[in-house]
Image 1 (cartoon, rainbow, N blue to C red):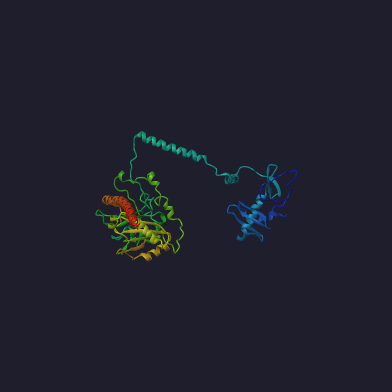
Image 2 (cartoon, rainbow, N blue to C red; image 1 turned 90 degrees about the horizontal axis):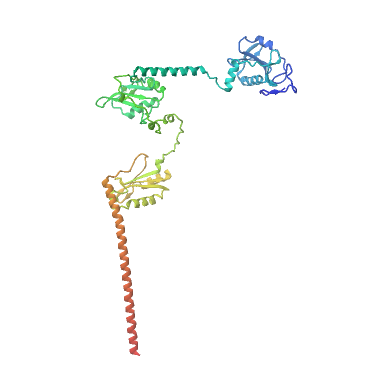
Length: 467
């Protein structure tokens, strides 16, 4: 009889379960009393004949032992997985369904018996493992009673007219902060930040996204030599206490201790920190969701990595403000000339002329860093109209756009209007000159025709006299 580990419905008319049927392969002589007599009389200990030997199992620890040399010995670790698989296969084969009745093989009596389906602890545990955890409805009743008690207490307070007085909140267990003393009085905020970052990531402020660091000052605004740092992780506090405490910083032995927030003075509602509004909570960036991004893994950049800003070249001293004021079209002319000149070094994506910048700045963006490097190499130091060009790569931070004043804006608009008016006047003058030239040409042709007719008449008259 073959068993595949699943319950099978066997028709009693076609197949019957014979007494003493073998399980898990060929029939073996079952001498259960011999092995069980040597087994420890421990509750939850069961035995099976697997792989030509007796195997015992402690159900509470799930440990396996084997019966060898008339004693139980621990099962070798390399045989554990194989024996465990055989154990579960035989255990599954010992349960069958015959005509809708669940039968179980009794290894003591060597016969099939009807399984006891009484609800016990094993049945409940198996049911919960397959269908979910049993819900304790008593907790639900207790919770509802607690809520009712809270509501009753609130009603009693309202009826008595007593109001709860507001006060300071103890933040001792909620903040992972350290108090640092004996700091150098000339320390800067960046130096303090770098010093405290040695032990962990500093907590950013949810409103400003700046690190929660503070250097205390006196009434005159001078540093007192102490400060506070708030970390994200609690482990950073312990690390700072063990590493930074006693650290020699610029000749000062720094003292670090866990911050203690004392409740001083009377409660002032105006000094209480307000909660985040809905608009503040929706601000993207490291202030809210970026805290998790601080600890995420990022691949290292390759050694030949260059930022995208290196594709932009900054050219200075290419023009002056006086040149821009005199010629309103100089901006467009410069843009075309620069794009044409820089195209020999590589493909140009964009050219920007900052006409209000007193340094005469023009930026050129190439597609690759090779093109920008070539442009810097060839253009830097070149003389243009008596001015030496300064050509460098953009650092990605500098801003060259200069906001113009109202006076400069009015002057620029006037120059542009004069430029447009000058173009229209020149067009009218050109039309007048063309008309005058056309009239002169017509008069010249008429005079030439009259002279030709006179000459022909005189010639005819002379020929007639001669004839």
